[in-house]
Every structure is written in C-alpha cells, then in structure tokens.
Image (cartoon, rainbow, N blue to C red; front, side, top):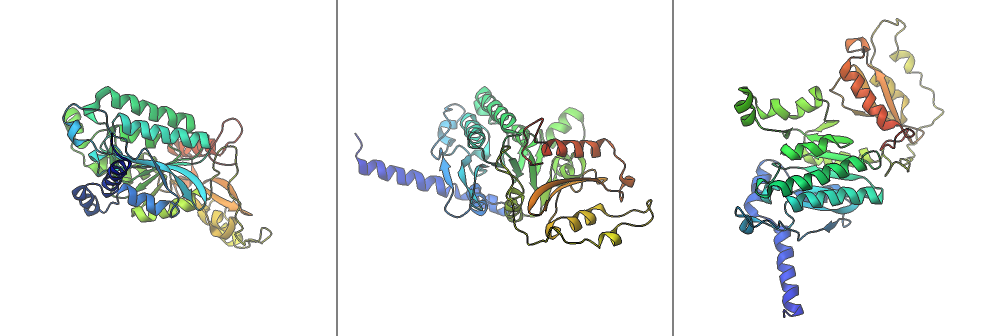
Length: 360
C-alpha cells in the first residue's frame, strides 16, 4: 500500500504536469498569437479566485492510440471564480491537449459547468477553441455533446450564457456558441460546421476559412457575433464591462452604478442632432449616447442589419435596452435581418412571458 508521502509526491508531479502542459503545443499556440486556456482564465477572473474542477479527469478510451495520448483535463479547463467580485462559472477549451477535441469526458465537464451555473444562478462563460468531435470516441463523444446542448437550452433565459470564439472551431464546437446569449469573437479566428475541404468535395466550390466562418462573416452576414475584437486581451477585458450590464440571473436585477450623471440634466444637444426636416437623415446612435449616462452605450451586432440599432445603456444607473431604426441605412426600413435582430433582442429584454438574461 502506497505511503502518504509517495501519494503526495505523485499528486505534486501530476499537478505540475497539468499546469505545465505540452511545451511544443504551448509554443505553437503562442506563435498563432493565441493564449493558452489557463492564461485566458488568469486574464478574465479576479486574481486568486479561480477554483478548478475535475483537473485530473482524463479519457477512458483505450482504442486507436488513446491509451498513450490521453492527458489530464482532457482538453478543457473548468471551474468557477469571480469577475469584479461577482461569481461566475467558466470553461476554457485547451488546444494544447488533444487539440481540445470533444470526447466523452471533455463534453461531460462542459455540461456539468453549465448545469452548475444554472443551479447557482450565475453567468456561465465559455471560451471555445476546438477542432470538433474526437472521432476515436465515436458515439460516446456524441452523447456528451448532446448533454452540453441540453444544458445550454435549459440554462438559456435563466442565467447569462456568454460564448467567446478564440480559435478555429469546427463541427460540434460550433453548435454551442449558436445557443448562447452573447457571442464574442476575436478576429483571426473561425467558426463553421465543416471546413473548406469538405465543401470542395461535396459542392465543388472553393472557399477560404475566412469566407466560410471568419469574423466578418459572422458579424456582417449571419449576425451570430455580437461583438468582434482585435485581440484576446481586449475581449477578455471588455467582458467585465458587458457583465456589469447584466443581472446574475433572471430573478435578479443588474448592478445599479452611480455614474455621477445627473438624471435631471437637460439634453439641449438633441436639438442639434435632430434635423428640422423630417425626411433628413440623422444618426440615431448619437441620440442614444446623448440620452444614456455618460454616453456609455453598448451596441450589439453593430455591423449586422445596420438599419436597426440595438444595445444596452444606463439611465440613472439602471440598465435599459434600446431598439431603434437607423435611417442612415435603407432609410431605417425594416427588412428580414433587421426584424430578426430586433426581435431576438427584445425577446431577451422580456422578463414576463419568458425568463430572460436581460432585465427590462
């Protein structure tokens, strides 16, 4: 029977191996101007607050060489911590371990994290960077993906679900972000169901990864991405500002912040922004910025259906939602994309007929 000392030494070695990761894989990640999963987490949460769960979990698959290639964490780091003193749950797919492919244990960890956030009534943040399903685990992988999607559907409307695209996400790694409430994307990364080679083989069309699922596609054409950032650091920093607009759950209220903006102030500048000629165009965004506290307006999907503007701001420190026609584009007429953009946002703002992640 192993002594306490030998068990402790074994635990220390395992812990060091998990934290160190594969040196070559980490170097490769950095050459792509991408951070590792643990580096992303350290930038996101308050120092010293992150508690990792299931650190030593690993794949139970033995076939197809998995008995030699499996690693602790199974390619995803999960746990909970604080952001600006508020509790959140999070998971970060780790590209340095098995390319963050989604196997049975990998999927179970993510599903558990989402379910824990739902149960605790706090936001859940997912950092996606995965090649997709782990084919070595076949149906076991698919079963765990089903649990992830099920838990996302259950949690949506109860707690804020934030998805961040931080790598090339394909196959099953593209489903979960589409079911999240807010999708943030770092430029240079991609999200698609299948890659250019499969498109070429099945449809005979040549497409690049940028044309198939780049940041411009999802921010301008599909409308999936709510916000796009130039770097991971910018994105992770801005999440703190975004969460400050949101309640922890549908039964709570958003933080009320003292902006120092007098709620009784006059807004004479509106007279200059609004033209006397009712047919003359004007920028509705400038009107919104004039109304909200300290011109702090968070516009969502700014490059999609630009004839409609949606976003969050504060009035007397309280979060409110804004929906407005933008007559600088198509004279503010409402087409299908604009309608979907506004309708989905207003559905989120509703706190009566359905439970929502946004306050009304």
